[in-house]
Length: 134
Image (cartoon, rainbow, N blue to C red):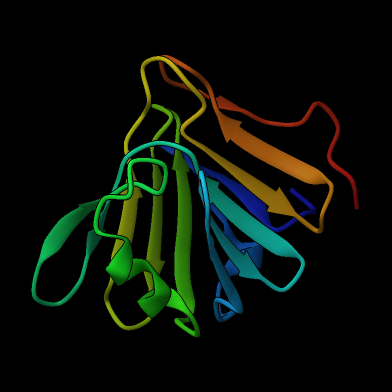
């Protein structure tokens, strides 16, 4: 696709976010990671794997939030939205944020250039925009 999104065997790779550092981490009722004009919002429980451990993280239940500010300035190596509704954000330092498919809510949303949205669907799956914008 012309928005830096590539269809792969098991989902979608968001190549337009690769090589960009996390410029802002916002923790409220959801976790927001901003990379320039792009962002990832995590609405459901996730797991953050570092070089030493993997810990559950969840903004709205205040689970292990002390780890999340450490994502600031981390360079994104990969963003993969699985057909199952899962999301993987892998960083150049080897850390990885994994969001499994959510059974009853939107688990995550990716916003590209402020207006192009990809989101997981409750119960699994991914919603892509009908018409890509250049």
